[in-house]
Length: 139
Image 1 (cartoon, rainbow, N blue to C red):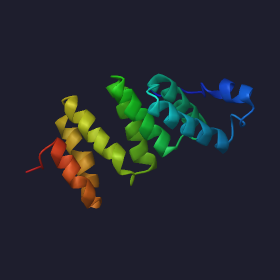
Image 2 (cartoon, rainbow, N blue to C red):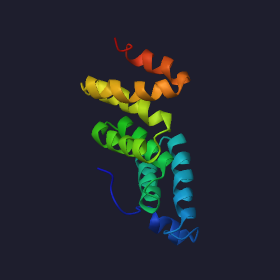
Image 3 (cartoon, helix red, strand yellow):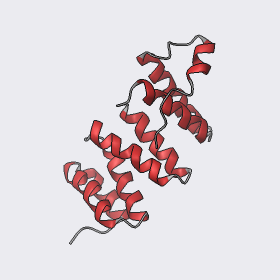
Image 4 (cartoon, rainbow, N blue to C red):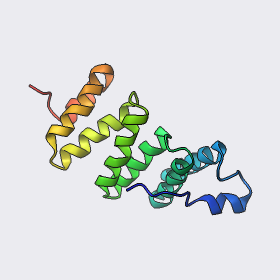
């Protein structure tokens, strides 16, 4: 489940960086989350992505990155929830579709896993080889 409320609000507020209710706060959290991922600090980055999402619930990139981290941390169901949200708020964002297909397939849900990434792959031909590398084409 994606937690509500910005866990990073205190940190940025104390630093005087930005207002924890404005769009700049969401982007600050997102950017710093990306930095923390590059440092291998995944749990902290996840908290920052959650903060960005608390301010901007439809922040597709933060939702995607949160899903990626949760999946890496072994929280597949929560990752799938984040990626599903991206497919509804930004249906043309290709990565969540591919991630959903991979995760659902690994969780033993092949009927669901085949629908989403392949459907999107038809709209983005460059995505098809990556999808087929993970799962064979439907017959």
